[in-house]
Image (cartoon, rainbow, N blue to C red):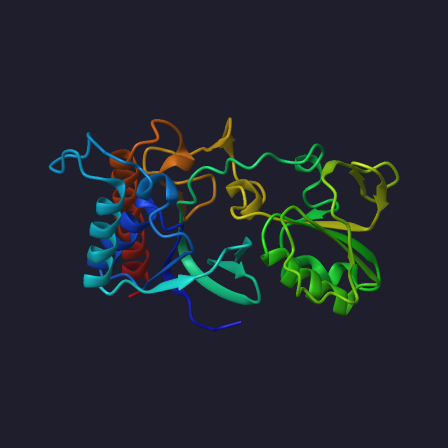
Amino acid sequence: MSDKIFDLIIIGCGPAGLSAAINARIRNLDLLLMGSDFSSPKLYKAEKINNYLGLPEISGLELKDKFLTHLKKLEVPIQEAKVDSIYPADDHYIIMARNKTYRSYKIILAPGISTAKLIQGEEDLVGSGVSYCATCDGPLYKGKNVAVVAYNPEGIEDAKFLAEITNQVYLIPQFELEAEANLPEISVIQEKPTAINLPDNSPVVELENQQLEVDGVFIYRDTTPADKLIYGLELNDNHIKVDHKLETNFAGIYAAGDCTGTPYQVAKAVAEGQLAALNAASQIRKEKNKLS
């Protein structure tokens, strides 16, 4: 783990995250922007955007290019990585992204909205047999049997890692594996998972034609739901609950954009990204002044 602690880490590269990064950079914060799909498919696939002030009838792709040009001009540091989990630690937060660890005093969550449908029983078993991070929780299953439900190739890499420390790995890919995939120590089952149950304190994965009794289940999607990144995050329905400063129930963790609720509009996301960054900067400045 690096000893470096950032002032601010922003998670998500949609309009809210990019806006937060630009405003935090202008306020001279030591920041890092983390994400993988820059400016979000929902934006750059839009044929026309008619309600963004000053830019009538601009295409989503054109607006994306303007956002990224602004980002590059300010030399915003970017780490292309999918965040797996967030943990509180003393006066800061620890962020896990695959096999790397980052630390930050403040965080802005801007992951957008996950449209992935959860497996029946999945949500109830998070932390009790269901995990989204092999690096974080894999060692708990040393010598045991686990299932990996993978909606993207990332799950294959973590299945290989788990095969090194567990007794048996069952990989359940929800996409077509490449012909050259070499997985000699992993049992591949190409079926759809329909439910995850916990009949005798051990998860049972219900598949279309069979059941798998395992000790743990790891699930990999393109976007991890925000409340699964940090346990205890309060929601309003499917959105992150925030106050008027866009701060969540965790002190120093803010949220902005579609993840905080409707309307799902670019202008709203950009505005919330700015507000979250300014509030985080203000709090950081107050805390630094107290120490000086």
